[in-house]
Amino acid sequence: MLRRACLLLVLLSGCSSESSSASRPDADEPLLTDAGPCGVTTGSFPPASANHVDEGTKLTFVSNPPCGGDHFGLWATWGAHETAVPRGNWIHNLEHGGVVLLYRCASRAACPELAAKLEALAQSLPADPACVAPVRNRVVVTADPDLPAGVQVAAASWGYNLVARCFDESALRDFYTRRFGRGSESTCAQGFTTSSPSDGGMDASSDAASD
Image 1 (cartoon, rainbow, N blue to C red):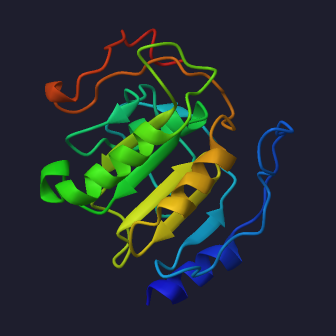
Image 2: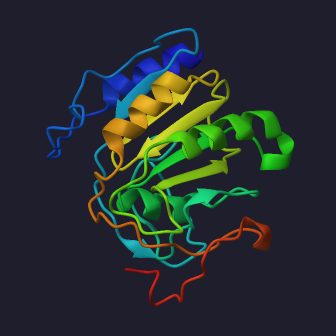
Image 3: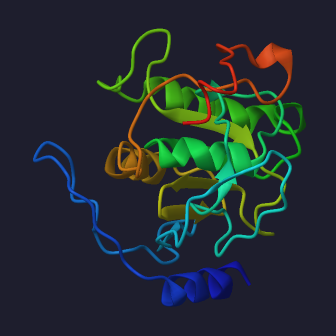
């Protein structure tokens, strides 16, 4: 069932292109469909709009996980979160050129081993030259219980997503390398803690965090 759903996502998707430096892989490589043992599938869904809406506004998306569209004015702190970050917040991180790594659980406590794999991957990724300490790179790791049935791990960037039946480090690392820094508003400014206080991170005022 996952394969049929992923095939449909790819067939319905369009293509988008953004400039890339010579030191990075081409962003517009062919999309994957049920590749490898984890069935990695990538899709391209160019956002039709990117309006900032009030926190808590009901949002609709053309893909799951979403990879753009209208979103909340506050973005999440970069890094790992103990509780699920609302989609409306982390989509704003995508707009800023970030990549979000997702796992289909209600919270980190519900599947700590899978969360730890994604967190270790995030920590191993190269430092982002656009970021300033304490932020190392534009990655968010969060649970997302609304991922499709059969999808255990997913990733999203502005306009692209990846779904998989299991953790595929190589595919996720390649997705990040190709997709980070390609949002419509590229910045590594720190975000706002949107979940529990234990998530840490630097809180920003609503004015500073809604650009």
